[in-house]
Amino acid sequence: MSGEKFDAIVIGAGMAGNAATYTMASRGLKVLQLERGEYPGSKNVQGAIMYANMLEKIIPNFRDDAPLERHLVEQRFWMMDDTSHVGIQYRSDDFNESTPERYTIIRAQFDRWFSRKVREAGATVLCETTATELAQEGGKVIGVRTDRSGDVILADTVVLAEGANGLLGARAGLRRTPTSENVALAVKEIHFLPEDVIDQRFGLHGNEGCVIEAAGTISRGMAGLAFLYTNKESISLGIGCLVSDFAATCESPYELLEAFKNHPSIKHLIADSEVKEYAAHLIPEGGYKAIPALFGDGWVVVGDAAQLNNAVHREGSNLAMTSGRIAGEAIFEVKSRGGRMTKRNLALYKTMLDDSFVIKDLKKYKDMPALLHTNSRNFFMTYPKLMSEASKNFMRVDGTPKIENERATTAAFIKARSRWGLVSDAVRLAMAWR
Amino acid sequence: MTVAVTKLRVEDKLFQNRYLVDPGRPHIKVRPHEHPSANLLALTRICPAKCYELNDKGQVEITADGCMECGTCRVLCEASGEVIWNYPRGGFGVLFKFG
Ligand SMILES: Cc1cc2nc3c(=O)[nH]c(=O)nc-3n(C[C@H](O)[C@H](O)[C@H](O)COP(=O)(O)OP(=O)(O)OC[C@H]3O[C@@H](n4cnc5c(N)ncnc54)[C@H](O)[C@@H]3O)c2cc1C
Ligand code: SF4
Image (cartoon, rainbow over all chains, first blue to last red; front, side, top):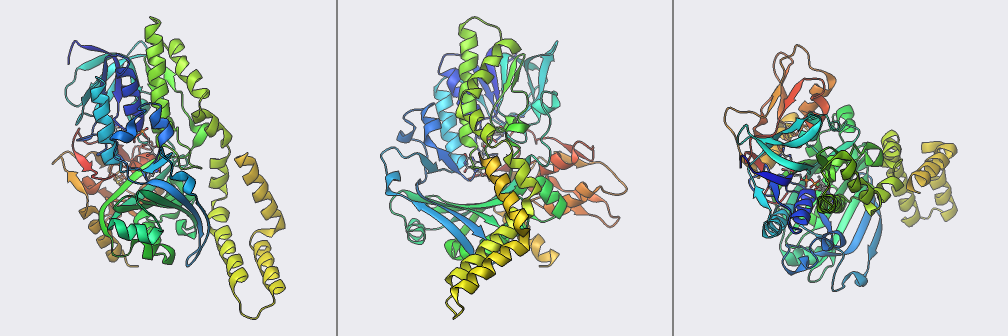
C-alpha cells in the first residue's frame, strides 16, 4: 500500500462509512476503507430499525438482496411504572405496501451486505485494521496510520465515519470526546423464538413487524428509553440511559435490562426464548448543540462521530447513511471541479447537509436534550406513575363514584408536581418539541 | 439482589458472546491510584461487562477480557487520565454475531 495515494480514505464500515465509500467508489473515485472489526458489523450495535428512503437514495434496488427482517406495520409507545403500562398504539394496513418504508435489521448481517455492495462498486476494503492516527502536515490531514505498519497511507481526504466512540478525530484535536451528558449507554439482547410464536404474540402475518418503545420507571429516574423490536425469528430488546445519569446513580445497566425483561408487560412476550447475544454501545444524544466542526483541510466527519443522531425519534442509521452519502457527493463534486480538498472547498459538505433533513430535524429538537436531562425525574418517574394511577382510576369499577376518581387523579398530579410545575413542564416540553 | 447473583448473571450473559482476546495486550488500563475518583468507582457498577472491580485496598482494577468496547469508561475517565483507552488491535476484541 505504501506509495499509493487515494482520493479518499474512509475510517469505519458502519452505516455512514459504507454510504460514503459506496457513493465515492461508484462515481469512480479511488477509495480505501478501513474497518477494525473482523468483518463489517462485528463491532456494531443497533436496535435496529432501518429507514428505506435513505438507503434507496444510495442503493435504489436494495430490497432485491439486502438482509431485511420484517417491515413495520405497528408501533407502540408505552409509559411504564413498576407493574403496568399505559400505551399508544398505531397500526395500519397501509404499511403493507409494495415498498415498505421501515424494516427491522440485524446489523452484523446488514453491514456485511452493504460492504459487499461497497466492494462491488470498486472500493478497497481492509478489515481487521485499526486506524491509529491521522497524519497531518501543516494543519492539513494527509492520510492515516494503522496498526498494520507505521507507514502513512496517503489520501486527499479522510472521511471520519468512526462512530459514537471514535478516537481518531478526538486525538487529532478536530473535535472533543463526547461528554457523559451527550451520550447514552445502551445494552441490548437478542432473543430467539420460532417465527410463528412471534407472529402470534404480536398479532403479525408474513413479514409484518411490530416495535415497542418504552419509557418510565424502568429507567429509575434516569433519562432513558427501552425498546423491543421484532425480527423474523428473534426479538431485539434493550435499554439505554445517559452516561452521566448512570455515573450519578450507579445503577447497573444489566440490572436495568433484567428488570425490563421481567416487567409483567414484557415477560410473556419473550417467554421461553433463547438469548444468543448481549451487546453494549453508546448512542450520541447531544443533538444539534453537540455537533462538532464537520469539515476541515483534508477531512470531513459523518454519522455518529459527528453526533448526527436524533435521540427523540430514535433515528441514527438514516442520518448516518445520509451524511455519508452527502459527504461522498460533496467530495466527488469538489474533485470533478478540479478543486483541492481544502477547508474552503469541503464546506460544500456542510452546505449540502444543512439543506437536508439531517440538520433540519436536529435543529428542530435543539432544546430537547437539555430539557430531558434537567427534568429526568419528572419525565421518567413522576409522570409515568401518575399516568398509570390515572388509568387505573379510570378503569377500575369498584363502586367509587366516577367524580371521586377524577378528583383523586387530578389531586395526585398536583400533589406530585404542583399546578405551576405541571404547566411549566408542559410549556417547556411544547417549546422544545416545536 | 445480592452482588454474587448479579455477577453470575453478567458472566452468563458474556458467555453468549464471541471474543478474540489479544493475550498480554489489554486495550484498556487503569492508572495506579491511591483512592479512586467518583467516576472511576462508578465504573465498578456501570460498566456493562463488569470489567471493573474494587480490590482489597479499595483501588479499582480492570480485566478487559469481556469488554464490549462501548466507550463508557473512556467518556467518564479518559480526560482525567485515570483510564488509558485504546481499541484492540484490528480483528481482536468482541465479535458481535448479531449486533
Ligand atoms: C442500542 C442501539 C439502538 C439503536 N437503534 C437504532 C434504530 O432503531 N434506528 C436507527 O436508525 N438508529 C439506531 N441506533 C443508532 C445507529 O446505530 C447509529 O446511529 C449508526 O450505527 C451510526 O452509524 P455510523 O456509521 O456513524 O457508526 P457505526 O455504525 O458505529 O460504525 C462505526 C464503524 O467504525 C469502525 N471504527 C471505529 N474506529 C475505527 C478505527 N480507528 N479504525 C477502523 N475502524 C474503526 C467501527 O468498528 C464501526 O464499524 C441505535 C444505536 C444503538 C446503540
Ligand atoms: S469500554 Fe465499556 S465494556 Fe469495555 S471496560 Fe469500558 S465500560 Fe466496560
